[in-house]
Length: 304
Image 1 (cartoon, rainbow, N blue to C red):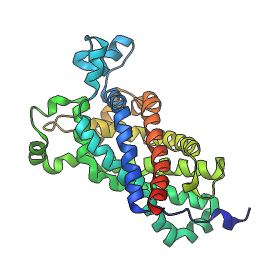
Image 2: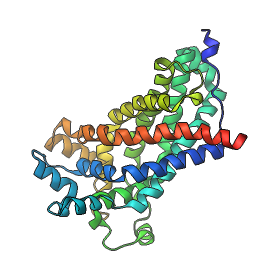
Image 3: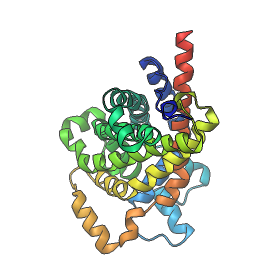
């Protein structure tokens, strides 16, 4: 197969198809995985050692640990409103925005990537770089993420205040930790879209990524999601701990980093990674594969 065959540009979908496909994936994701996300955030926020099931139960269910299991499950839905708005906007921005960034790179820097890395690797790296650019810009949505995490891990921080009141009181304080979030998102999104693209290029042998079947999108999403979670794990733990503290008692990322290294050891930076791979991993695979499949489907629907 000639190099030119690998450097063909993927079929472009309409902006509306990208928005609807990504939003649909976000809605499905929040409906299925919000309790799982709450468990993951509470495990990452926990700074004590968990050595038995009783302690694990207390970390996950907090004050409701002694209640019947049916009642405990319903305590895993805090911050659902914030989570729904955040997740839908995030998925539309990330999954719908990355193709636009990729098209920009493809139009202006394609030859540079292909000359330096070859047609196949260059194409995959453009997709990864576009993902990284979009990931950095995701900090715009940080306030919604902060409020979602506080609801999940530290509801006392709200003290009866509603959304508008918190926005008024905290202002730009809701962007606390934006630097760590950008530092987490850049390599995380690079690995997500890069791992996905490399799998499609080298494992599945696809020339046009947009023509992937559901099963191919699912397989490539596993590669991307796993790489993203592993690469971003240390910074994600720091980001979560910055965001889950009380509004009036913030702590810098460097202070958290220093205290974690001193009191908990290097393994603390990968706290929650295993459950995250087992819980957040499927969530990311689900939404990413769904978005990649729905966007072309909506595009075909609108172009008939």
